[in-house]
Image 1 (cartoon, rainbow, N blue to C red):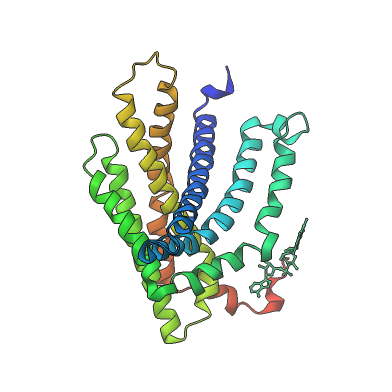
Image 2: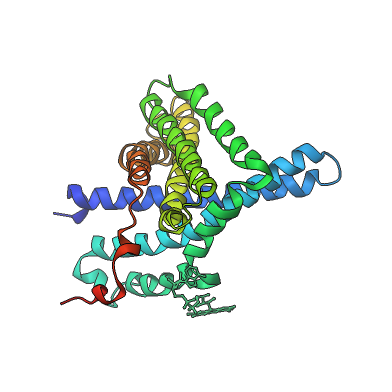
Length: 269
Ligand SMILES: Cc1cc2nc3c(=O)[nH]c(=O)nc-3n(C[C@H](O)[C@H](O)[C@H](O)COP(=O)(O)OP(=O)(O)OC[C@H]3O[C@@H](n4cnc5c(N)ncnc54)[C@H](O)[C@@H]3O)c2cc1C
């Protein structure tokens, strides 16, 4: 039996496809904002500052989530191949080791997460985050009644609410001087915002692909491509997005166990 017929192998393949395509879309979204910011500079100040603000907000997501997930995808690729993946017969074991450095370069990904929560969320008086949430809200409002993708888009709306709530909680910690909670939560918040953004971009692609599918028959060379886009969006919305709300509920717990444990007690016995 070919391994692609096993349910768990199919799950891993779709998981990798969704993450790779979603993170590529995230990097391209960032580049698009950068191009628009440069084009508007000196001509339309409001447009320039909107796009430049979105660049500032998305840079830590692209750097940290992209590099963390690159390693995660390579590890899943080894698992998909089984023992053959662990050996040097296929290139994935080399990709896995090589990709681990990406989250360590430039001061490690935690520094990117601290940049997001410590500087970027509050930048321009919070206007960049507000604009991001407004763009996301417009997409949710436009497509939550979609016949095929509506439920997935509604899940995106719930994740956006969790991001807004998480940002308010972080702001509260800053205002009340509960600063130890910020670095304990920064990586988790970056992950929540990245997963929400990736889901948004995958669903945007899925909506377009769904429209295209109504115009091409099964024999068309692009049929599988469009079908893949719809499935990647649905998979990510159903399997990754619900974790954003869960992670927001973990923020409510305000757990500080990692700080409370004495240094000597880290030793394993
Ligand atoms: C193969 C390779 C190539 C490299 N190439 C370059 C290069 O071309 N140019 C360049 O400039 N650098 C390069 N570096 C260095 C790279 O930038 C550093 O490895 C990286 O900044 C992490 O620093 P560190 O290794 O000293 O770890 P440390 O700074 O000691 O970090 C150890 C741990 O402590 C945490 N930590 C450290 N400081 C803080 C802090 N202030 N707040 C919270 N947590 C903290 C980190 O997140 C990490 O988990 C390279 C490194 C490698 C391994």
